[in-house]
Length: 458
Image (cartoon, rainbow, N blue to C red; front, side):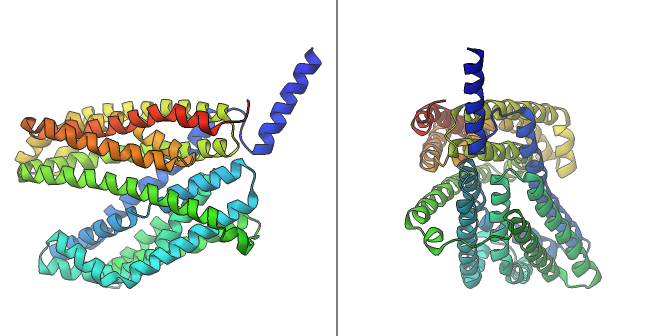
């Protein structure tokens, strides 16, 4: 009997090893993926602050406004292509779970081809993109001139930026988040150094900041691709029939399209929130923007755990192993709520000091303090939504994620409409309702999809 039990355990262990999935998902594994990605995400706002400080040393408000507006424009443009990172994570994690080395290479090459094509289109359409961006922003002629100087140089970084999304996603899908952090942090550090050199030492002004970003992105792409090639033993070739397989190309386009629609819907909710705040007055608009940025800072921490869900759950789904899949979800949600509670406590303790640091307007300070609690609740309300987004991306359940997002947006608009009489309180409650609805809808859908996906017996 004991010998029979030993054989069963040995067979199970062998089966798990063949699929490349850890038999037990541990706290250490979750943190080993989440923490490096959190640090990688945090280098992005640090880069923006550095570039603003560098150009701010020139003492020209129009130049500073131009760099700030230009950075926002590129953030919005590139955010729409975030599916290149997220989709790549899910696809390569599943290939890893199946122990399909050829498909891991094919995923990388397909995504790089698509990134290059999208980046080239952005470069070719730079004039209409700039015109539309400036038309929507409505800034002064001086600021518009500075934005144009910055835009026409940095736009050539688009193919490199999108390729970096692919590299980041591919490394993350393999669980090599330490290398992903190395590439991201090194690229952003180089950007800071180059911007300071070109703007302050060589006197190139706003154009120098754009050139610094271009050179740093190009260098980051080169280093990232070399790391990927090294991990593949420099065996990059994939048969043409596999690379251009119609079924896999179609599923990749569908996955990316679903993620893009989900991202566009999320961007709409933030734009709607800002628009309604503007109608309530300048002080309310400024306070809402300040608090929303503080709340979204905590999201960078939750994003790290969403990335862990993409990799761990994607790998388990690819191997059709239900046990590590469900345990990964439980552990990641546990850590996510823990971080959200810490963020809530920090908001309530140092939030008023942070408000005073970011604005000197007594009116805006008073307004922001009045609504601080809502911003503090954003991380707690959003934990389930962000983590389950990662689960659905890793498991390639993108259609359901897209549909649940659209339903949540409808709930958001209904909540806002029903609470219009409550003014800005109603607007904030609707935003919190959006996060809760996203998480709740995904949680309700998860058991059905899990039963459909995991058909192999444990």
